[in-house]
View (cartoon, rainbow, N blue to C red):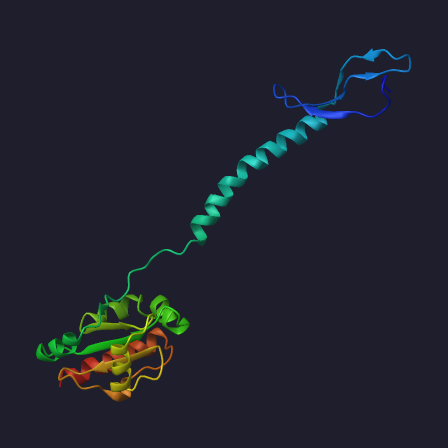
Length: 196
């Protein structure tokens, strides 16, 4: 017990990293000012401080690794051409079948099609046989309403297949999320119909 009682404060010194206990300036029972007294805490406190320092140094590295592996990597998918009136006519003139995708950013199944289906290598490969047109309905305007009515689109996602003559192959129409295999099946069927 020191001149100021048995209390004290712990201080980590920068040169050694060891904990020391000290009694700041205080008066003893005779009214004299006691000097600042430091006592070594021992090796156990030193090891603890060293371990904490190392742990804190490793945390940013672990965070960077976790960020890298949890950040989604961008994968290329079908090359969509934004809708324009002339594209369907041009495709019919060129004798080219069309995949016409009605899409919106606020549509979860549309996002899933983009992420899981339209990025599949086989789907991308087959898409090169088509004119791939996308109408983005994220922000609506009057011209889009006319198209929705003309093609009887009730919601998104909707994927319409047009043959080489510009007519829709109604039985191939998609009006909800489908997996990669179902999309490939319909694309192959459209290619077969277009080759006749």
